[in-house]
Length: 160
Ligand code: GDP
Ligand code: MG
Image (cartoon, rainbow, N blue to C red; front, side, top):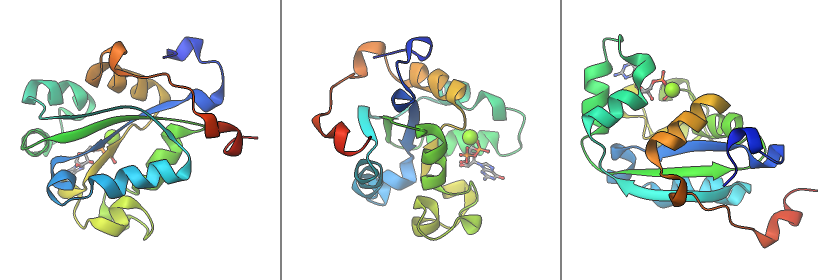
């Protein structure tokens, strides 16, 4: 798969999306994958993993001084997560729009959080907030060989 510097086109932007333990427990894996798939984003990596607290502390390193950090790490380590990489034009920004606001009470209906969750501490999904953090997160969750740079035959019906 192309790394950021080698990215051939804006259509190859990548984002890290994860279904958190509450999303898995609540049976929302298919629903969340469906939304990215039907929009036209391309799935290039996927696995179910129960992350260690140490792994999650690195993933959420920017939040380490927040009062909710210990409970966040405990919640995220409480069960399996579905970790994914989605690729496409504006994948990072559009992924965040599709997820909705961090606080589900501020998320619009039609967003994943706005349709399926109520509280910030149980907001069912994660999405990278910038292209550089997306690349950092992808490298943190996936080995290079776990990411598939496959050719999709339908691309010319999604991009002009
Ligand atoms: P995100 O990028 O929208 O996921 O939001 P952040 O990066 O700011 O926070 C990461 C995650 O920490 C959120 O998705 C929530 O699960 C959790 N979180 C953020 N703020 C709070 C808070 O005020 N209280 C609690 N309990 N959890 C929070
Ligand atoms: Mg964030």
